[in-house]
Length: 302
Length: 331
Image (cartoon, rainbow over all chains, first blue to last red):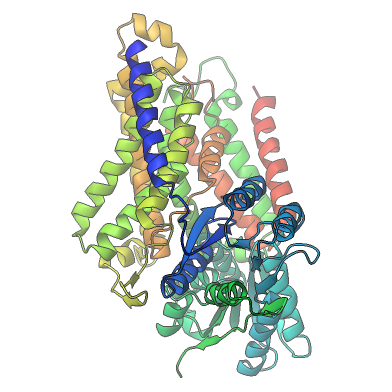
């Protein structure tokens, strides 16, 4: 085992050196922005970081340090504490949860570090600015879109995102408001937990059970794509309108362009707006306490 | 099959009969809650077989590992790694399909052999060694892709996306043959099943796998190369993960570094509900097939009846326990 131990030690040392090499020191001159992302497991959040990077790259005077909390509330709290002690000029946080991250955000705010809260909220008012889109509004827009594009009596399938998550609940609530007064029936609903493979499986069940389905509303574009593949496999895709949410450039927008989805409703990341707002704050200009991002609809060309 | 019938014992005592009992019980449940006849359509069964195939392929490799007395927690992550590797090579780098398939099999097997070596040579607990591989392979998949899905949209240097065509292999694997009656992925699963049956029941290595799982010390004293056999079982599991990963990529038309999260638990459940013992030494690949069908049908029946997620999880838990108890009571 001695040999094994030695190999292990060498390996660990190499790994330590590599990690040390990766850690970048905050620059002394210019402005430093700390960005704490709650997780990079979702393409949408990867896109948010990319948007922030893209927006920041046009301003050479600012430098953004990205941290990924890997869906761990306590890790994210520690990251904000690190930003505070490193003395960054501004913090952007896309928090995992409201309650556990409120104190640390308030702590930074009290120390005079401006904090921009992105996408999900924290409690109270101890932050500089909240930027986010409104899932209820987007869900409502999706519902209204179907009302104008379907005949009365149409039959719908709803493939929900994780229903224990706020976006899933909001996209459902908004949608129900959107179709409230119309004569549309949801004949099948399932929780596909944001995953394409699940959406496809559930849609297969819906297709096996119902001979007539007019539209599928999925809480994200991969879900709508999975449903489309299930319908295509039985040759019923042309009779069904598929709509999804998010409209990421490499996902929903492509599906709409290819005619797979009838429409996709953008859920903006706010990356660009966060950097714009950050620059205003750092220049001493005043910014609103809350910025609601507008959503675009991507529609297939007739 | 040696477990089929022992003389002097009732037929219900054979593991196959007990496993079949659980499957039949689930099928009866399906006939009872048939969702307005949807359960009696062939399409429902065909789609169930498609949906369960990726898990089934993982369970094939898992069977060998469990019979040898080990466990492999890394299957879901290796599946993701293989799925992004395959997408990257074929969609973005335009490799010819055979080379891409070989490269993916290589990646999967390398990961499996690595876990095997950690278990057999470094004497690590299989749980820990494959847990480490599970985390590492997931990280590698994310690193290779930069955290993004590998799809037809290729990012250009200016941040915009260009669209490339999908290789024909993707569409072929995601299609159905035999007059539209069976998915290609299901045939891939059945092929894996058959190959594992040959390995476990027809080759000397297979007898060694049972021997190692049954009594490692006795096997060693009888001259079985215990370490090598352990490494082989994990290597085969890695190969199965690579195959499953490619099937997953073809069915999603993309490589997702987050794919397969939690699949290891489903694969283990399928093996165990079939009746293969987690203590090693006992079980068979056919029991795994029954386990795969049991879980697959259970899932399908809950799905066609549109049972809510909360009740679905509770019912799955209850029915799995009931199925295992059903097996025990006849012992």
